[in-house]
Image (cartoon, rainbow, N blue to C red; front, side):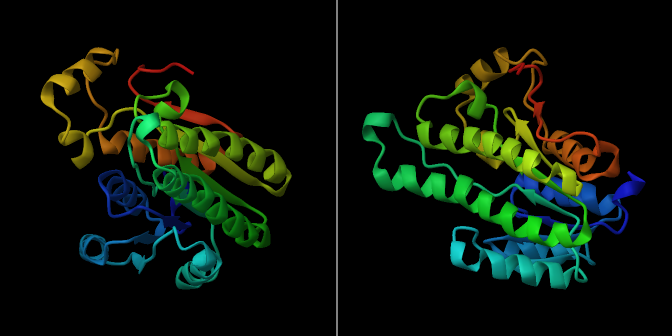
Length: 245
């Protein structure tokens, strides 16, 4: 996608499996990338693989520092911000009657509140450019619900609704805000699922397989590019037909 060439893009949660694939896809399309996450060793490994990307270790749960992080990241990218991929998130699963307030609050604060603040301060930069793209990574379970994930599903559903509101607010400013909702993707986390349970999940997917991180990265590249200029406030479902929203 030539329209990604020289675009200044921040990728959060870059040290995970999906984050790695997003960075690789954007790099191959000649974007200028700043990768962030909480594990400096993994970020340094990314920089070794893609030697001209920028890296900053940052924990998005540090709400008071998010504006400073966006300012520093934008400066590191050369002074402007074209796109941010909000991919970072956590899970703290438990059945509802066993879920502590701390488990509920932590997931909401990181997945939803942190994403809101990343969007807010990124939009301030994009308004100066008079254009921009935001891609928020949600989840299929934010649409379907899931046992033991009341906190996680609420946070991901909240991102979808929030993104629609932001899209309406800033569409006239040439800023597009969209979501990608992955289904079950083959990552280190899904590798830990019991094989019997995994086969049960696959049986519910019409494509009869788990997705690959590259499937999400391809969608990110599209929504980050000029090819998606007339798409706003939408959620692109990447789930092999598991959920048809």
